[in-house]
Image (cartoon, rainbow, N blue to C red; front, side):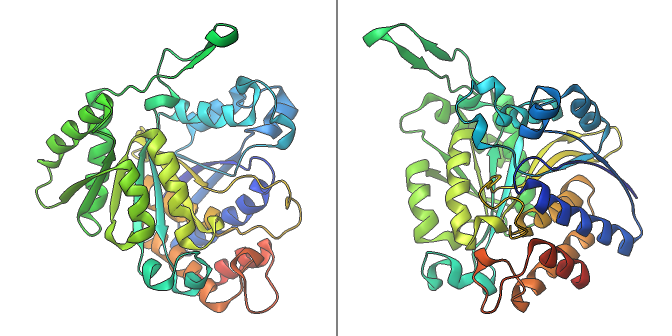
Length: 360
């Protein structure tokens, strides 16, 4: 298979962890006989420095031409106080819109080698294995009207949470399809006791569930779900929710794995003409400029994103499993970066990437 992937290294440690992810992608393609066609583009702060904007037109062209996009984190402290439309993060929102990705998938899995790294007690977190499916293109982040107006005591901010039936149905179907290949359970999260948007959300999810009689559906209010994630994380298989709730809950779920550096993510859209699912893949951690350039960032979240890319965009489940198995072997070996608190001297970013390649 020809695997056409755009690489967007991004800012801070993004470039370092993405470099190791690309090494792993190249290695797995070589092993399984695929042709990896890789191009590179600019996104975020580095794009602002080089082109004046966070999402250059050339990057848009390359993203539309590629079958999938692998990216690092974006964001630099020097842009913290500039207008929102001029910040690096605007490039991330922009490329999501360009690619039409509407489902953000965040796997949360507790590895035995890292169970002591979680702030939760071992008996609570052991065996956790879930996917949080977050709707990515609607809700408060995109709804209108929005903005700040008025002066003095009458100055006010407005954001609008809005969803259509079609938006809710397509993200729900994505969750149910994923559950069919897992433990066949979907938990839909809303705030239907207060919000009309959530009342429509729950109504549509129930209707979609009828198409999947083999999958169990339950509902949780978002505040209760936040509590259950720390009280009984093993109860969850596939969690589906709207944009802002998903943003918050998936970061809460990140601590279950022991380090945010471990977590990949996938943002999926519709099929491309090539037959591949449009996808944007990235680790969930930030650009961590305080450790950038020191070769000590954990690349496993980025490498896990390669596994997700192979599985979701290209349907290469065996290749994805090989990457995941190699990651687990490296974790068990203790050859890991400092954030995972190894017994001996911590490995560098490059050493962890090399170890994964060797284990494939």
